[in-house]
Length: 319
Image (cartoon, rainbow, N blue to C red; front, side):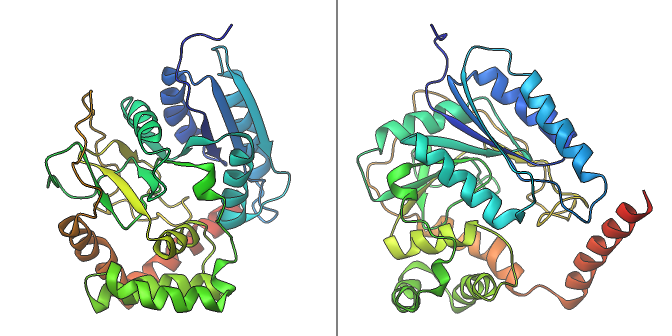
């Protein structure tokens, strides 16, 4: 028989950074989930060290599952990139479970993250207005409302949870449907709080549509906007993103204010909001501190971003 450990299944997403896996997987080991899914993208053909690095990561995870649990693996032989590899892994996960927690290898959770997600998955299972449970908090110490969490229009994907019936409508090519864009144009003025914020979201979605950006999460955000979905955010930051560095894909800036935020501990039992409605002050704060600064990304910062990628590529060729 299984031990009386956490019942909610976890999907753990890994790639080629063993030092990050050693830290984040230790938190999963502490939680001892009864059901664990592990997905890994394949090595890149033009990165000579990837095959070895990917093998080391996969082998480490296998060797360190030292508690009794049901384990499923989805290891790619070829690299699909951040978009398809992650989205297909999540779809694979929800083909087997009705709800679960998704954690990437560069997201270091506080131990309270797991019971936080588990309690809210149970609480809002039957409420189809709630689409997403985030583990991060980017309010710089500002508490929103009187409860332990609040609602937002925006899904935070550094440690999160959802249900299979919400994910069922996800499509990687969601941007190719013209009717979806018509619906979005009607929804955005109600969701956003400024023209600059609307332009930020539109720019992100258009870059994905035009294949200028390889990711999976803007499609999820797009869907939540269309569905008028609510997203939970904790009033304490439960996740530290430790992947801001030169070998990252989208998080390259070590000095970014959201890099390596200290994870906090959530107290239980949770205090719940009286009403299910978006906290506008919180969303305005997100826009001013994350979205609008990114939409005004300076040309010099973009050049720096690309130079880091070029440097990383040259170093891989030299090794």
